[in-house]
Image (cartoon, rainbow, N blue to C red; front, side, top):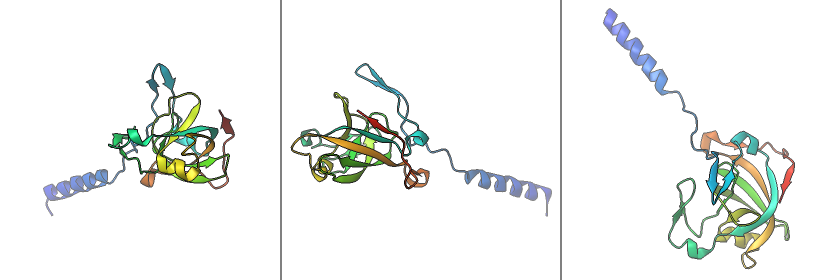
Length: 169
C-alpha cells in the first residue's frame, strides 16, 4: 500500500468523522428584546423546565389571522392552529394551559411572542380559547405549566411531578 493512499484514507476518515458531529441547537428563541419601550428577558431553556405561572389569558381575533402572519419563530400562523404566544418563555415550548374558572385544559405549542396588553400572560388561538371555554368572554384566569422546551432531539422535558414555585400575576 502506498504512502499517499494511506495518508488520503486517513484524511478522508477524519473528514467523515467531523461530518458526524451534531451542532448546538440554534432553534431556541430566548434573547432579550424590546417592544413599545418595555424590555423583556426570556428564560433560558433550562430555567423554563417546570415553570408554572397564573394570570390572564386572551386570544387572537380571527380577523387578524385570515391571511397567515408570521410568528416569532418564522412559522405561518393560521386562525385554526392550536398555538400561543408568551413574553418570556423560550420558543418553541410546549405548555399545558388550564382555565382556572372551569378546570378545562389543553396542551399547546408556543411559537410566538406576546401579548403586550396589560397584565396578560398568554395569548392563544381561537380553537384553544374555545376548548378552554373563554372564547366569548375574551379573557380568562389560567395556569400555564411548561411541559417541554425545544423540538425534536433537542427537546428538554419537565420530569414527572417536578414543578417550580408558581408565579402569580
